[in-house]
Amino acid sequence: ADFGDMYTRLRTELVNDLLLGPRAPEFAKKRITEVLDYNVPGGKATRGKAVRNALAELKQGRLSHEDELKACVLGWCIEWLQAFFLVADDLMDGSMTRRGQPAWFRQPGVGMIAINDSFLLEGCVYRLLRKYLSDDPAYVPLLELFHDTTHRTVFGQLLDLTTAPAGPIDLERYTLDNYSLIVRFKTAYYSFYMPVACGMLLAGVNDAAAHRLAEATLLDMGELFQVQDDFLDAYGDPAVTGKLGSDIEDNKCSWLICVALLHASVSQRDAIRTNYGRKDAEAVAAVKRVYSELELGRRFREYEEQTYQRLCSAIESQVLLPKEVFMSLLRKIYK
Image 1 (spheres, rainbow, N blue to C red):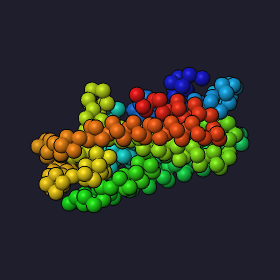
Image 2: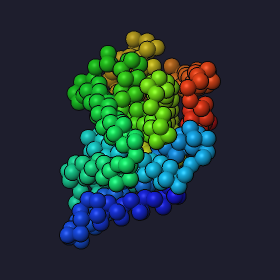
Image 3: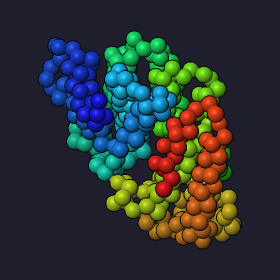
Image 4: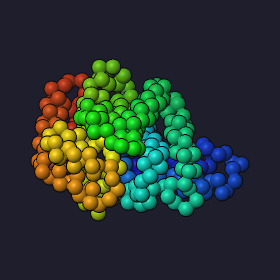
């Protein structure tokens, strides 16, 4: 099953049978199709494709047609779950764009209806799981994984929103410990651990120690990925990243602000306090000046290199899972 082609099949099944049944009015089908087409495909599907890769490594490349199909569906379930998070996240953040197009809630006639649309996207996940995996011994562990991942991601979003609430900024909250917690819950769990855990469960790997090892390694990898993302938010080219950086304006607890505060002088700290979280270009430039003075570019490259080496050693020294399960993902994020 080609991963991209599978989307159309799953969407058609959802719209025609799984969600609405035969009596649904055409306008409802049209609306759901729009919600799905706008929000589910359109990314790089890195997470979705990672399920099959993990399964292939665990089964040493010997995948049956059924394995391929289930891995493909699970991959799309993760993409659907992500769409659910992103639609809601963009609404909360008031984002302008997502994947190079306007955020869904900014489409004409959407607005607050995006809340219900996000619930709809979440519901699709469980329809698909039931249809394609209810006969699999991994069905219940997979349901648990999807629920648990959702819970963790929602908690991560809560941490993210409460670390930088509206109003005067509290620089004390911008610590690397808080940062790490937010990132692990909000991004790393569903982006890195989940696809591999899906592959492991499909392959019949239920060993708790193997899952603990995968979780620890992949959460570290997810944190590296997010630090790179934060760096690109301030220094990336929007033409390449597909989004305009706004962490400074949005008062985000990003890696850059946490590291800057760790090393800032009193006057640099004051400059950050005065300018961080403000929507004007002057203020953003002032924060970036402090970043440059503190050589955050160099600190980022050192962090990236050290973390990469540490991950390689950890992957090399473990014997519970094939090394390629981890290395294939690490190579994607470390150029």
